[in-house]
Length: 311
Image (cartoon, rainbow, N blue to C red; front, side, top):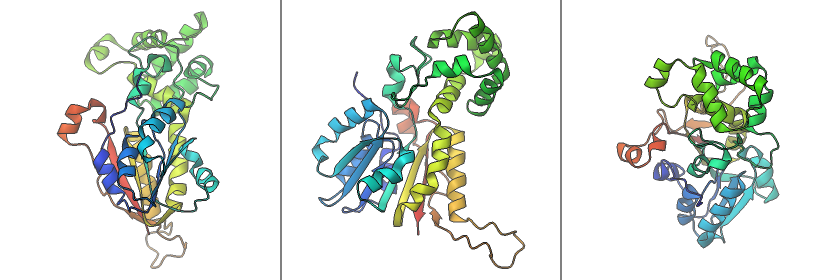
């Protein structure tokens, strides 16, 4: 199967980076290389692009796609949380732009055996990095009812989280839950039929929650933004595409804190905490896809792009 992922907000993201032909840029979530292809095409012979992805399939696909630019592209299999170490290993101190596309790729969703989708039966896997030993099945079968409730409530924002957690624990007492179909049936049984008929797929939120927990997606994002801003040259930009409110909230908050880190009480006449602004939020409101893009790529519907510029 071809590693396909229609790049969301492609030109908006690449334009937001203000590409300098001789600049150094980092794609922290390389995927199939869609955004990277556009960035590399705007670089001169002294420009450089570093692509990072933890998924072996993505690395292979992007390597092939970016072959015409191989002189200026370096691809590293890693998690973007290790961006500082990756750059140090390449002898790079600062860069001119970093961007992330936090969506799960179409390839990952559509390759049933990866276990991300609730639409086809497959082993409960969901690992973005298949070098990790822990899978979604381990979470479903080993987390306590309270832990399952917490992640489904917090990461899935599902109002039936308590009932879903209870049903999972009850079902696994009979047999280990190993497949996506088993889990889907358990979730369906935990949600009233009337509600199931109204909304989207009943398992969508729980699957999202388990995936986020397994791959520590929100933790990685929250812990990495300050580091990425730190690695930017003056005028360099960090552009991040999110796909749900949890990610967007983190990006919005971290950007705002970096723009105005002062912790002094509002009634202080002058700042005494000494915390200086590291830049400015370029996007007061997030950039969202236009109607045509949503029409062409349904998965872009919830995407939001936020941009920060270093001073």
